[in-house]
Length: 120
Image (cartoon, rainbow, N blue to C red; front, side, top):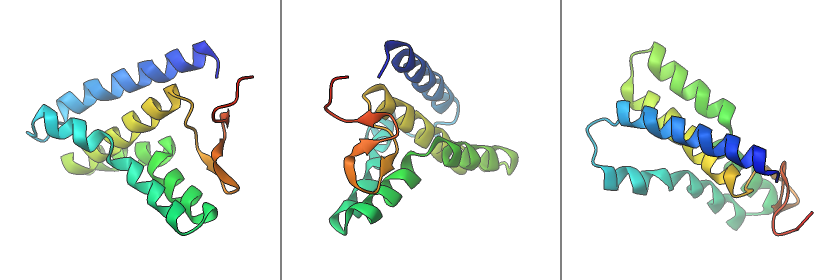
């Protein structure tokens, strides 16, 4: 993945983390660090098969879904939904800095950003 794209994703992660400080729900920082990695629970779908794994992973890592949740929480005056959406967005951006994109159904390493572990 190109450096410019990685920097863009890193900036989106930083902005999302900033917004999480505004919608922190009174939770401590250490708990937010743990929660930051919870969207990876979507990988459990790979225990069933690669198709289910890709769908589950993509639900938890799709920025459009994350933004829809955040906006619905914001406009519905629901701080919990807002925080969940921001957290999902931050995590998805963070993963993309490392090359983990949305998955195709043929395997975990085949993503919309290219193949993981392959130098181009």
